[in-house]
Image (cartoon, rainbow over all chains, first blue to last red; front, top):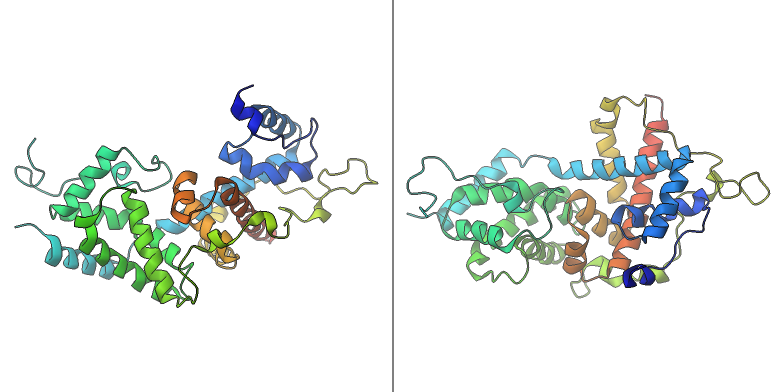
Length: 92
Length: 240
């Protein structure tokens, strides 16, 4: 076990309950769990459809949040910014 | 190496990785790539600026909305930010990434606009999540109680997304629900989820930009995501 593992405090019991698993989903997705905790998490998910569905919903939520910034910049705004660029910075 | 505008017709292309846009890019990017972009901006290469605004504008609007009362004001603030970027690019020293620098300009302008009375610091830097009341990620009633067969295990589990038509998951309606859910979050949680999940920033970048620890960031993100996930679930539970 590396120093880093030792410093990551244990988050899950050996056979964790779902109510505890849902609290560390974020740590799991961030890669912040020790390898031992990650293994406990994975093992729990293997046997728990509810928690698998929970993780899936969480991933989908993150995905949808990301799509909020995929809106296109409105044409008039884009054009007026490029005009500003030309007048301030364009070379030649 | 020939200068981009001299012997080539048409605009120079800047890859999204150079611009640092999207969740697939590495946070911070290699210094050399960013230097190329900054050089392009300084040299008056319009394609560089176009690529930059295309990549970041809507994320910046979402960020500004954390601090100001309306989308219209947010749009204003972002346009002012771009102008400030143009004015200030010659003075950009590269001590932070270009993205972080742009965001800091945005945040300062948004906070001024938002007329905050206190000193201008990010919401999340004012919060110590460890000292806030704990918020379960999921309503405790969804799990079996101490007297039941499997205490702590789901009694009312979430549904699998299998069998949910993709159009439903990609619908504008759901997008709107998620947007509103984020807007309804406490400001510190909203700030973190906007930078991480909406704008796609990495954890280190966010900690750096907001001046918070990884642990605090993770707690805020966890609480924010838990609430927004509930919105997704409620939407899915409604008859189509």
